[in-house]
Amino acid sequence: MKITIIGCGNMGLIYARAFLKYNIVTKENLLLVEKSEVRKLELLKLNVGEVTVPNDAKIADSDIIIVAVKPQDFQALAVELKPILQSAKCIISIMAGMKISCIENALGNPNIIRAMPNSPAELGMGMTAFTANTTIPIKQIRKAENVLNTTGRSLYLDNEKLLDAVTALSGSGPAYFFYIVKHMIEAGRQMGFDEATASLFVKQTMLGAFHLINNGNKSLDELIKAVASKGGTTEAALSVFNSTAVGENIQKGIIKARDRSIELSK
Ligand SMILES: NC(=O)c1ccc[n+]([C@@H]2O[C@H](COP(=O)([O-])OP(=O)(O)OC[C@H]3O[C@@H](n4cnc5c(N)ncnc54)[C@H](OP(=O)(O)O)[C@@H]3O)[C@@H](O)[C@H]2O)c1
Image 1 (tube, rainbow, N blue to C red):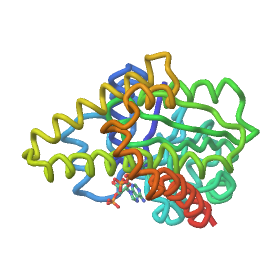
Image 2 (tube, protein in one colour):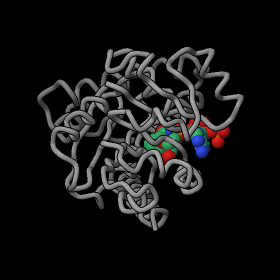
Image 3 (cartoon, rainbow, N blue to C red):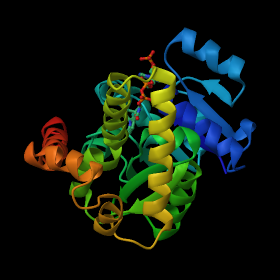
Image 4 (cartoon, rainbow, N blue to C red):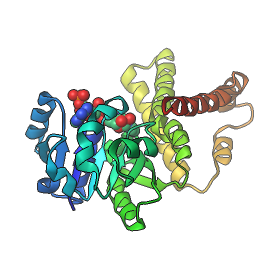
């Protein structure tokens, strides 16, 4: 297999490392396309693949080409890439909010897969949703799925429109979790713990609670009920959350993120 990654910033490098870790590709068959000289030198030092430029004809031989530049950099890049990518077999875009039709038009190639990963991909614990243009054969989709799965789990969606909801749910999701953890640690500090101690209590609690959700056999309501006894401490906290509509506001926030994703992709 030969892979090219165009744009080797945070996400591009995460993919390069994941591909090498799972032996999807060898360093010799991994092309990394970067713009800035500084970043090129950094990538050369990291020794994760061959570093090259957008108009390198070798890119056209790749089985999979991943586009991981920021959406605002894509149109200018597409002008350079178009002659090389016109006959490419499979192009995976991870650019947030960039529709398949837009990429297809800019590159003159219909073989586009659009994926939305999230930041835990860095640890191989990411969640990616992806969808593909109808022209792409199932064999190519499977190949792309294997590649995406090096960073965690992935799920194919038929409906491209749902990628806006994915962006709001799992794309931005890590930030919601960090926000809740941050406020729990702050509450610990207000009750007299230093940052490190409060952080230990909260992080281990979130880790354990996550495993109860993922590996236990109780529903979320049953899990809440099991901790919140009548008239007890948990119920006191939950009554504040309910009376200030914390749950509803979390839902509203996520739906607002979905709407913003729709707006940005116009
Ligand atoms: N970070 C996330 O959690 C996340 C999650 C889902 C999707 N995404 C998507 O992933 C993409 C990359 O995000 P990121 O966080 O990795 O951004 P990033 O760190 O800024 O990486 C983008 C890289 O592309 C390079 N680049 C820009 N124009 C180029 C060109 N013409 N040719 C070659 N390289 C070029 C940039 O170089 P310069 O810095 O020199 O411009 C930079 O190194 C974005 O489209 C984003 O929407 C990110």
